Amino acid sequence: DAKTTQPTSMDCAEGRAANLPCNHSTISGNEYVYWYRQIHSQGPQYIIHGLKNNETNEMASLIITEDRKSSTLILPHATLRDTAVYYCIVRVKDSSYKLIFGSGTRLLVRP
Amino acid sequence: DTEVTQTPKHLVMGMTNKKSLKCEQHMGHRAMYWYKQKAKKPPELMFVYSYEKLSINESVPSRFSPECPNSSLLNLHLHALQPEDSALYLCASSQGPGTGRRDEQFFGPGTRLTVL
Image (cartoon, rainbow over all chains, first blue to last red):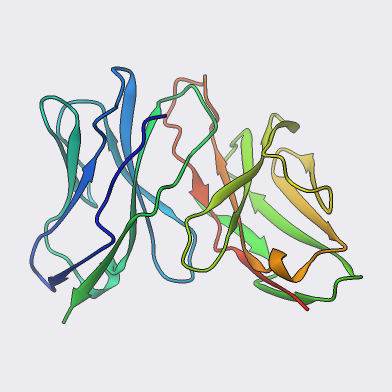
């Protein structure tokens, strides 16, 4: 699975959009981008995944660049409960059990 | 029901004790996982069970012994642990690859283990 690079930490104001970047310059054509988050003292939680088109669900939007070498997770109206570590993971969908977590981005949402 | 439950929430044990961690899911998932997470580090995969058979062992020391009694239950038996084994132990489940369905993993809240 391709390696990902994320900023160590970010912060944003409550109610504003949080944009979390991820670089995955060695991504292969059949690898998807997955995002999970881990709120303090809880297990990780799946957020969203995508291959090349932008994706949106009730939690977030995922924007993948045309060359697929980077992506951005967008939380449109961040709340205090969105304070968490966000993990960007690249993997081949539906072919492997392994979910390899990188260091992630620690997002702090400020009141 | 989209929940993975783990018991106990907290466990303190001595190096000579034998204890077990338990995990349960009722989502019909056929893959179940154990992860270990040290403080301020990402989760690391330990074991994977697929259709109740051990599929992956990430070179975990034998003092950790997994067991999958049925498709809904996953245990982790602990014996002769070391203080450096203190960590958060997370259980997860998923449909499993090759099912053609969504394969995201659902995680439990974890068991926080302290080895004295």
